[in-house]
Amino acid sequence: MANDNKRFLDIIAHCKEYGFIFPSSEIYDGLSAVYDYGQWGSELKKNIKDYWWKSMTQLHENIVGIDAAIFMHPTTWKASGHVDNFSDPMIDNKDSNKRYRVDHLIEDFAAELRSKGEEDQARELIEEMERLLAANDFDSLKKLIEERKIKCAVSGTSNWTDVRQFNLMFSTQLGSISEDASEIYLRPETAQGIFVNFLNVQKTGRMKIPFGIAQVGKAFRNEIVARQFIFRMREFEQMEMQYFIRPHTQKKWYEHWKEERMKWHLSLGIEREKYRFHDHVKLAHYADAACDIEYEFPIGFKEVEGIHSRTDFDLSSHQKYSKKKMQYFDNELDENGKPYGNYIPFVIETSIGLDRMFLLIISNSYTEEDLSTAEKQDSRVVLKIPALIAPVKLAILPLVKKDGLPEIARGIMDKCKTYMRCFYEEKDTIGKRYRRMDAIGTPFCVTIDHQTKEDNTVTVRYRDTMQQERIAIHNILAVVEKQIR
Ligand code: GAP
Image (cartoon, rainbow, N blue to C red; front, side, top):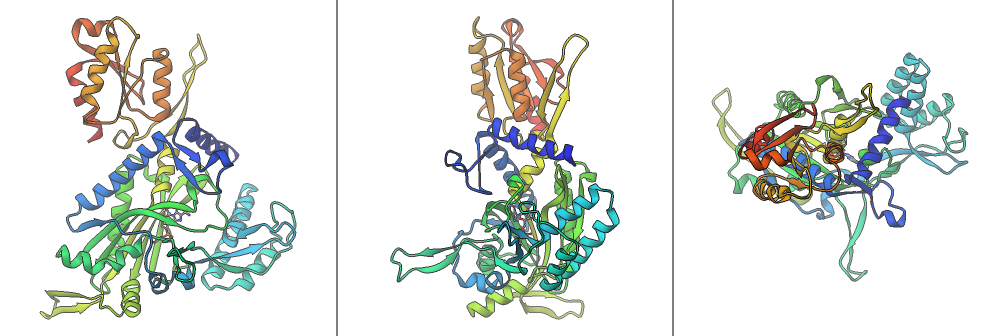
């Protein structure tokens, strides 16, 4: 575990050093659990988003995308249940005043037990916690924390307050004059923008059930205990899809989407053993079944995506609060030959955090390699990001800054940059330039040397194997495109 945490810290440092992620407003000492994506981070994030968008919308003919506003009518959040239910149980240590999410406090304690080889006790503790959370039994949760003598990391005492619920939604004022202003929320999930537009999309797109609506966008949660880098942020992005189905067919579609989503993850070349499903014991207020797709981050197996069977909870509730019909007319015939008629569809949701997927890709690709030989010590850090989503696809590097090589390299750059993200660099030795490209995950480098002037060939160098071969200039695009399409 200690080694894994070192790996996690190394990844965080690498993200900062190579322009992937910076703490937000760092010159003012940053803002807790808020991050900015730098030049390569924003490229990678966009590529992940595009890959998800394409596979969900373009490759599924019955799924379309929307882009709803972050601000929504405040009643939306009453109807969705977030005003009343979107909260986490918290506990404060009376001596340090430090606040903990109850599940995090207990999970950390269970991890300590595991590190001491007390696997059975750890499992028992987690099972008991999940049972009490599911029952909203806060008194017993407090008792559990006290009985196990779980201590605050700051004060070292187990002098705890009662367990209380904290709502995670941020609110702000709409309107400039304070008397007229009304309180609205920053959306805590993108899904509600899809639900309220369900009929707009269904009617204007002439969509037939089953069909899906997908969306990528920002969500905001006032996470009381924000930690673990971009794993848990206060401002983050979600990629969500609501799949509208006939009532009581949810079991079949829930299994279908579990499988589909796992296939998507594996399509990026990530090993199956790095993933697992985790079924929820405590269900959110809207769900009749739910599971997480978990990935083995350096800090352990953690949720990256949720698959939720949301029944007709959201549409029914919006129908009730808005007094507008949220029904679909199904003119197909059932097994008895009768039309299905009007109904409120059920929904299966797939919801993946874009930032978590980013962290997954970086964690999975970050590789430290020892390249030492008998003659000299050497090593490299390389991000083995799938070529398809790598921030830069191709680096174009003239061997020296003279003899007409930069001119040829510039010509190649001008041709290639209209097709893919390329990077031109002529400073430093070629070895140093290769290392810098390894560190940002560039899968292909081409080097222009004196032989290029004679036979119009370049050296292409492959990131993962570091192998090199000579290819004709006119073949560069074909070699790269084969890997990124
Ligand atoms: N619409 C359902 C929903 O929002 P969720 O399990 O609360 O479900 C879905 O969130 C996904 O959003 C999570 O699997 C995670 O990847 C991401 N996510 C949730 N909270 C996050 C946070 N504070 N920071 C980063 N990502 C978060």
